[in-house]
Amino acid sequence: MATPDRVPIEESLSVGAILYVVLVICVLVYWDFAMKLRMAISVRVGRNFMDRRSVHISRILFRMACVYAGLRLDLNRPLNRHLPPQFIIISNHQSLADIPLLIQMFPKHRLRFVAKQVLAHYFPTVSSLLRYQRHALISRHGDFSLTYRALRKLARSTTPGIVPVVFPEGTRSKSGSVGRFHEGAARILLQVRPLPVVTVAIDGAFQFSHLRTVLHRIRGSTYHATITSVRDAPQGKDAILSMVTECRNEIVEQLDSWRARRERH
Image (cartoon, rainbow, N blue to C red; front, side, top):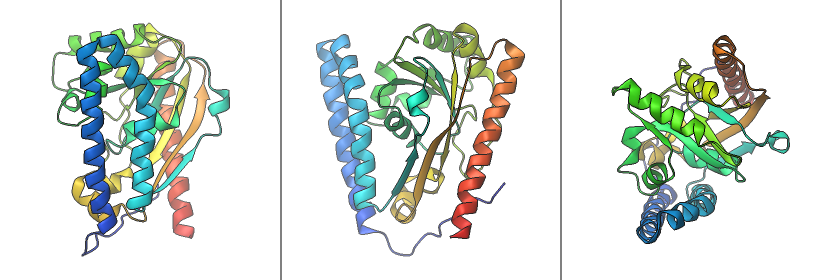
């Protein structure tokens, strides 16, 4: 596997990156207030508002990142025209930014993430979306029965237009390398609701996954994402386990390809 690009931290801060961080905070606080205001009026009104505006918010965040912070965004969606009506997304995970990135990649679908419980608080807009849109929020150290029920609930609520998203690594990769894929969440979801599986490879966000690295490293970085395959629904436990392994291998191969291309240039 190719070695992840490590952009050296510059001595001076980027003014554009500082402006970008300030603007992101303002945008997220504004939309968080707008969401909570509508939730206070009506839960249905609030959730409908979030479903309508989440793609718009994601586009604003990445447009600002490109204009002010110098981020290059490479979204490759050649298979979007061939997506089935319902499916599950399996992706590697490098940053909290992966959530709005995937929302932007699938603008015609309402994504529901399997995410850590801690993300339900402290992150304006992102936390509100995760709490109020009925995502599966789980604790890695809590009662497994609660995790099991949350995943089954997500699977049962998957109707046309709603797409569960699983990060099988279970946590963000700090180095950019793809960690071990744990099959538990995907297995529970697919056993309750057998659906086609869309694999997505993501790379680049590990370089600016924290505030300090955003300020120093985001300029000139490229954030890649692509759909690598669309699979029929796996039938049975063994087929699901094999599929999860194949998804990881695909993602590793795609990351290697991106990094080899960067080295050539």
